[in-house]
Image (cartoon, one colour):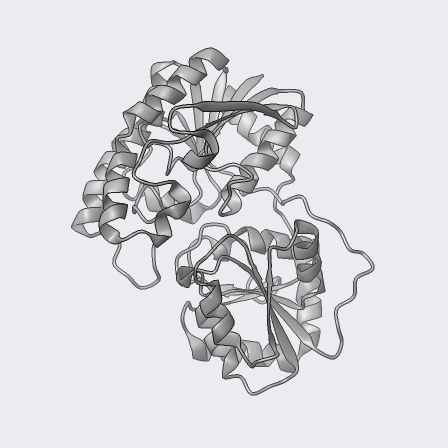
Length: 397
């Protein structure tokens, strides 16, 4: 089958799990014998203002273009509010970029398009793809169609006037997509409650287990309980909340490994925050094999997000290495963790609840070992090959 994958980001330009999933999907499609191309974005310094950079990457033809907007997507977190507002308006109706992608698709002539995050390319793309009469499957990854930031924060109202206006346009633009896939029932419900995808075929397909290195001979330390956090250095990920909470813990029999991914101007602030506490260690710019090794050696992975997460990749990665998870009870996370069996849940931002749960686990490390074995045994995330098969079956329906 001739397929084109469209994603706002694609390695080496990455920020989160969606880009890695797109890359893994492409590799698996090629492995299964499909003809695959990729259309994605790149910073202006990489491809210029008007040029479409086309090159062969691991046997896949990748087309990169700069989406005409006031700045590149990855620079957004550091921009002032008025700049982000203008950027979002252009992103909604960026028909010139949609027209450029449409021209590429006419040349490529795929039988179907599988799209991931389109924030940063153009939300006009579903209309452009539909006009070519090409099958289009879109995978959801966050709430970017419901809120411009792509974030819902715990305990905050999510139905203001601005959100209602924004959703009016995104609901209309994405009504042109025939197939919608959500990794969690929670995320699909959030959209359907707001009357999204009424004409689309929808399916809940959990994200596949990522390709990871296996360390059969690695053992977890008996003297120190190793905790780990893997993620971005952003307030909404809860990393600062976690560090401030654990700094007040008087015990010395634990160590927190902070594996930071992606660029952030807040990294220096994090260094100052942990300065002088030897129990807190930052690991940055680590290759994937080393990240996998830290997860495998940890007794517990902590997911302290202050926003409502859909399906964090770190949970799947931890289960695959036999490491239990202590995570917030919000968003799609409860669908991934069997509370008390493969991990434990706590209320976002609840320091008392978090500390009580952690204290119990530190006092009973046998619970961590038991839950780690259960996480490995009960890991029901589909393999990548099965995930691809489910997507293709949906496209054939």
